[in-house]
Image (tube, rainbow, N blue to C red; front, side):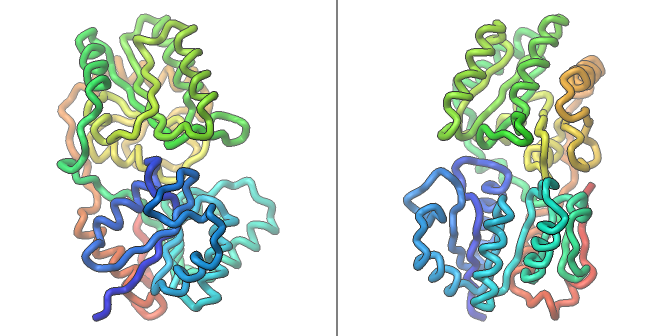
Length: 363
């Protein structure tokens, strides 16, 4: 059997965000079964990957024409539509994954978008909430989280200065909380990842004499360095240097989760967050905003409500439940995931009964 060529379109790491990590782990999972090519949509251009922002239409079309399967992971509707139309023009099999699906769309734009999404052989949504805004035939729609478990042994160690900072805070009896952002972004004119919210809560918890500290990692500040420096200045002005470590690093967040007591996800919009899944996988308590339906076991706080987040954190800290021995939560094994994606790429979904009634939701 000839090995198929799969063209993956989406953000390629670095920076390391939920989608780029999904792509990275997926290609590693299936490296022996398919030949992968890439169209990178990230703002950080790399020499090894063709970037859509090069505006080299000829090279882009050659990649589309060469592919047997096109796997679209774009974050913007306009880009999804563009790739779907071009892929359909060349009669390619297209798999579309919606990692996020903002609801700020007019009725007519939603109808248009849904019509274009019909061009995909399969549309995978990572959160069942997305169904509310999609009108797709049942045989085309799958609900499946994008989480692929990490190979812990392959994860690099944390930078020494971070490990030392955490170790020193633990010696002081502090509860370690971690959060991350692939970059600094806004949504609805608010900090998408809730850094401002976390700083405010840290300030209030310190006033309440709670022994806590934050480690907040921003993978890329290339386009928002000034905002990053402003947050650091704010931390300094509030005298939170010993309680809030805001860093710009390309590190293993898996390793940081392992060293932390609580994982936070304070985003004001979301899909099915990799951060949340990895924390649950490693047996760590998670507190997340209530902007979407979260997996079972996640503690929710009201979106953009610092007082509610503060209350939920205090309750968790005082319960000491995070001090119990971590227990890995069951998730799809790598072999199960390999089978799922192999069948998704290899089979003809219109004829393969394996997918006709398939709907997997892990909530």
